[in-house]
Image (cartoon, rainbow, N blue to C red; front, top):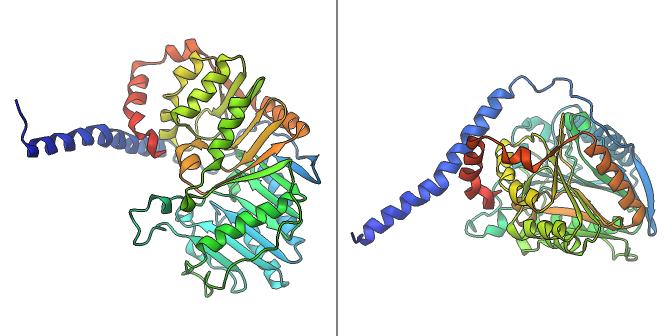
Length: 424
């Protein structure tokens, strides 16, 4: 039977509804059920998990200090703000209005009062549930709220839909912090994440990353403050020197720049001994999966550390759709228990490491504003391997036999959710 043009259109509409509508509906139901089951769990005492105390290594003409516990990080970040003499630059994805969030806000306000130039950036969409009164800042602070909808009349421009997922603190020209930690009570003690503190020439690169984002978006007014981002660009001086041991990679959707994915692929393709990768959310593209499989097949020890259960149940299920081919290729999959592991790190061959804000998913690697620090240093790589080993002691390894024996309804759910991969 030959279909008319109208019949073809109706058929295509129904097909699209099945292909995308069913997975979306299933994802919504799963999220609602998970939220219902998790009710009342917030505020409970978190189970302890292994952490590594802050450790500083000399790298080039500066230092790199690694943090794996939020309380340790927050104390040093606030101490840096309290010691600021000229300028504080803070950028965060989530900034809760709880006790930890208030501590940061008060430290920034105090810095402003003593004459320090304070600039803050936060993502509006990520903080919709934060009370509006918390987002009122002293008039002396420069605040940029990255809007929920940033495209304006250019709704067709996909480059304007990326979220600001970065977490940066730069104090004067002496110290910088970057990594996976957002700001809030839960992240201080209940989440396992990784952040680094740097000194030396690399601080200038972090300042430039903040300034470039500010200048790209500064014309957007802040409705909850008497000041706006119209005060003019944030200008910084020329870099005093280059640090060959540290390199920052920034995803900038507005400019179609996504170097973090390339950084990962280059390191994976060059690996000859080991790849230890930790990520909160794992929804890679096929090229990324193929690179990991190829590394394992040529004898590289490839290990991926993920949460046993993350804060996004749909992402967990979509991630599982990759497990069969990875396990068959010899990749080891480890699932961190008793806490949400939110770190975005990797170390390769005892020399190369990265710590940053980008997850191994499409939103981070080809969608959002992200920043990762690439480090070429054996001492840092050794420390990153030790951190991975300690995390591994709190993880459950997924075996091929265990995975093959999973229930049929689990396999069916993974299959149905597959069309959502490009959206995450």
